[in-house]
Image 1 (cartoon, each protein chain N blue to C red):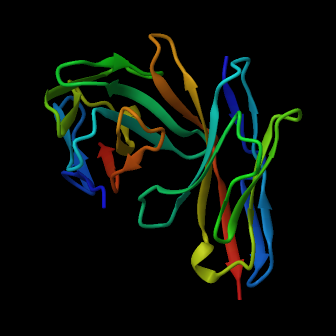
Image 2 (image 1 turned 90 degrees about the vertical axis):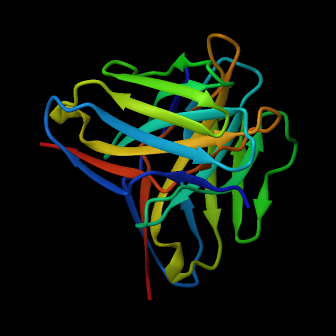
Length: 112
Length: 117
């Protein structure tokens, strides 16, 4: 079974803090994705990576950056957290030759 | 531009009955795909079913079937014989080729399904 894990299920941070969300997949997938989920908006793509050290902006990249130094790990970074970044963050991975994305359990981030 | 619309914020169904969750989409690309995901209260997204735009037959996976009407640009999910464990949030999503030539997904706002005993 494909497994995508995220470092925390719940996280509370203060405004202005630097926040790291980590995602690890164990199936040697080439592509990895970060989404945020908000009520009434569904999931929106923040960034994705199609290979190690490669990244592409999604639909809402402002205020975020990413890092992919190893194939299995994709990090989402909030350089200076703000209250409007309070949300559920979901990581996903996909094999390049397939369409299906496999999701992690999500991290519910609260910025106070 | 691509768009996915789920017009039902919430639905309820009696246990053992069938329910249809609506999804319409908009794209000018000839090649695309449609997914349905289930999200229980625990938060993880569970893949249910996939339909490619060139697939001739409607996709089925156990109690799930996708009613694909290409001319109407709709991809409704039908759940037969509902179970209490089907209570969850359901998302429709569309795969398309974004700028840069990469496969991307866009999601609808979701429909919350409640199954009553």
